[in-house]
Image 1 (cartoon, rainbow, N blue to C red):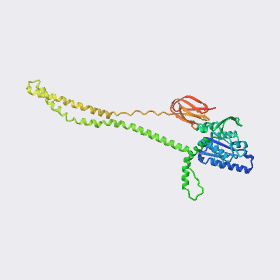
Image 2 (cartoon, rainbow, N blue to C red):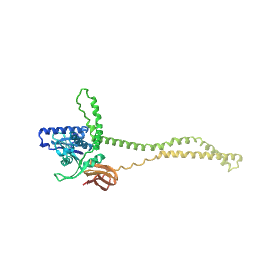
Image 3 (spheres, helix red, strand yellow):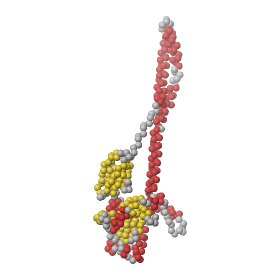
Image 4 (cartoon, rainbow, N blue to C red):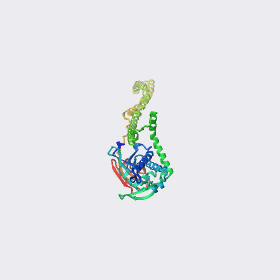
Length: 423
């Protein structure tokens, strides 16, 4: 966790306050803090250590969940359920105000830093607004901000039934906050508990293996999961690097295959045509015998030679014509093979690489990015996208505000920033 210091996260922050804590005797304060510590430890036992940061605020606690936003909802519902198990209803807690806690949840940006002791700490607007939201809650109530409601209410229909809109409130810094009160719904609690069990199952395998390897007589076992496995960002970076290597190797293989078949196709016909060319070589011997026959025929015509000798000469002359025709037939295969060797087919020129453009997003508090009708992620956490040069219709959507639409045109190597604040 400490290796991620000075980084900004969008996470769920729960602020818990013990009502009337400072007015109670020290012995009563110790009892209340012990009860809160025990119930809180039970509620977060299935959440990975690297996905949460807990700060002691004296009269309560601040919890930052870096993973699933459902973790904050399950924790607060579990704490409230623990109070019900102590034979007090939510109505009784609100009326009496004794032994009660109030909680506020907000989804916003926080920065992970180190405190004076070198331990992880969180600062930023996410925890500040969480404290303001908590101040609007009555004893025994759970109040959430608009940003947290927009995200969690869309995860499941059971969660949407939990929230009741309470209107807008102004804090001491004259800042407006829309708040929602979390009610009681058995289906939502069951859904949150099932989700926690599913996520806990992914990390319980290492715990069970370590427990089975422990000594039979050991009373307690400390189980840890490697930080590399729990660090999602490192895993994402490694996966991205492997994907890039695979893409480069695939491109080289495709390019190599496109170059190899061309010379093979040109050379392959040559052995097939060579056989018919060699076969007619004995045939040209016939014209050599016809030359004296034609000479005799020439001598017979001007003189008065015997007609019996000229007739064989003419017959032999008739035989020489097909003998001359046979070499002419053998020439085309040689010419074809020679042309094929002299002029091999040329590979098509490779298309020039196009450098993409960069779209940078500055969206507050958050929005879904849609490019030409295709969803491209949620900003934040998405900060930038690489796109091909051209015209785009950029649409920024937020569930409770009208969408923001822009038409843009980018060129190669352009960097264009799209800013919008939903109000």
